Length: 103
Image 1 (cartoon, helix red, strand yellow):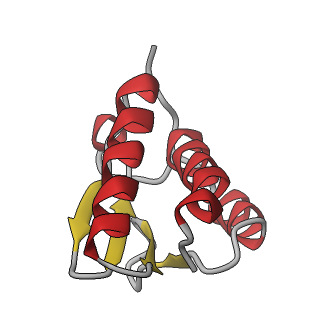
Image 2: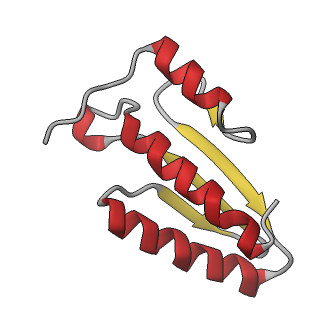
C-alpha cells in the first residue's frame, strides 16, 4: 500500500505529541537521541527498537553509542518524505524507552 507524505501542518501537529523529537532543517526527517545508564542498556534498547521496526516493516537510521541510542527516520517509499509511518514508529519507541531507563 503506498504511503502519502504528510503536510507541513500535519508534521508540526504530530511532532507536538512527541517531546524530545525534532524536525530536520530540511523538514524531511524526525530524530531523537536517548541517554541510558550504560552500554548494555543502550544495546538492549537498540534490539527492542529493531524488533518494533520489523513488526512495522518500517526502519530508521538507528545509532548505538556507549550510553546513547539515536534514531532518525523518514519514509523511503514516499521519496524520503515524512509519513504517518514515521510518527507511528516514534510513538512506539517512546512507549518502550522508559522500560530501558532511557531519558
